[in-house]
Image 1 (cartoon, rainbow, N blue to C red):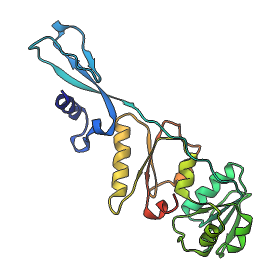
Image 2: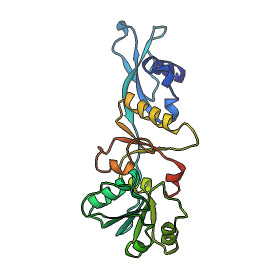
Image 3: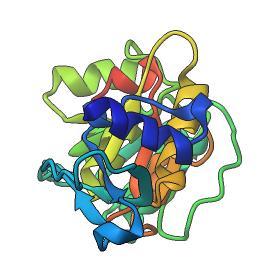
Image 4: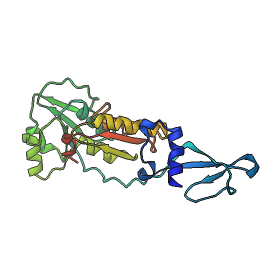
Length: 239
């Protein structure tokens, strides 16, 4: 029965981390172990197989997870040249990944962050970027840059695509992707989701608003690694 399957799963998973696995679509193979006189164990995997009547049965949940996921094709990127507005962690990661793809990239920051960017990326600090906008066909907005910043408002008025770093990275990453947002508890939740995947034998990395900038993962992960992203409201504004 379903209740017996759940109890078997609880025996191999930390009870504090036990969640409704069936509702999540994560499928465990559950081994039915009848006494030796009834022959070899049989696998219950979506079908009900009953051992001999009145025989004691032991349920054992295998830790190998069969992870079923369909990854939809991401939209392509707009054509460059690109203007990256804001050169903190996210903006630097975006500029680097675009430059690595052979794009023409100009970075701008109203402050003086001293960002380390590869040769070939033109950098302007102490500037709002408005004078650079005529040379750009697409813009990346770092999450710390307000939507009403003059260069962002002007880009949208002119019909120039404005992507956030999270959107840029999501389009370039072919991986299964889980995004978590909310007012409180985002970091705890993404760390827990990453931990559950790894304990189940599924490679996962936690990134986004916590840890590594998402764009920094492009080209660095096997395609079956699950990306668990903490997404702030500022990052989601530009998705």
